[in-house]
Length: 327
Image 1 (cartoon, rainbow, N blue to C red):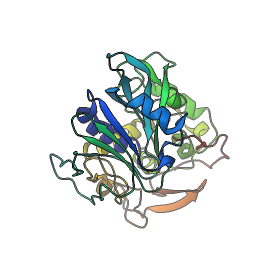
Image 2 (image 1 turned 135 degrees about the vertical axis):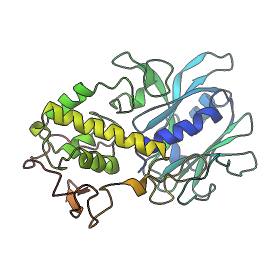
Image 3 (image 1 turned 45 degrees about the vertical axis):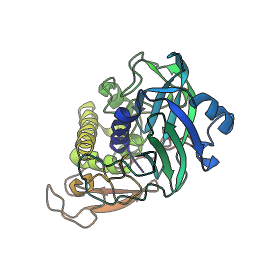
Image 4 (image 1 turned 45 degrees about the horizontal axis):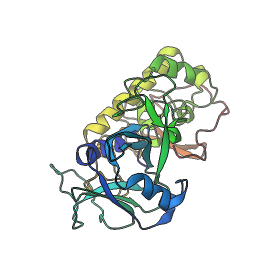
């Protein structure tokens, strides 16, 4: 599943090639991809065709475009999207050939036409394709509401307005407005395991399984350490480690293990070769040389070094890490 760095790579790829362009047409090839759209395809088409994309922003794993009407006035709603488990937003030219990236990156590049579910046709001939093999992602419109703290709504946002559909999501660790001491106190107020808390998008958004394992390895903390057992200093160290790991992943295009995550040009990131714990079961810990171990906790695999990641006895979780809403 794409996590924060991968979604930010996509946002950065979309911004220069879509912002300022008018939507000329909407093509829906599979209605399941717009299942969250109130009013269905007719409502989506009415909101988009003729509108101009004025900004592309992100909070956690949510992306959204701001929309302006033909007179240039903000429409009061956003086109928001979530990539789910396997979603891709890909750019193509009018003849369907994928846009060539400026520099090669490693990993597989998937067929840009496979599992295409929806396309936005822009006035300059660019086509934005939503490709989703498993159909857990989607695009839909959502009215804008003020951010609770009054700060810019997310990375790339022009103001404090965000889509109502993302208003339940906490700020992420790459957001300049994120209050790390407050997030640390929220972690320490719970008895749940620290990894469960890092995955709770209403505490801190954007972190998934990969970067939680890597952050906890960096901070020398076991995945099942209760949040309430952490000092404020340790909780802050974990959050800073998570932010630093995701910044490093962002620099190399994110983490790709297969063709389910690629950037807007169809290329994969290569942070996988820099991972210290995730997916390294049985390999030597880069820090102490002990074997990396994998354990299942709360139905999720956790990768850690039992020699240099220490913690106290785990406690029963006090809140679920996942809700039915997209995270």
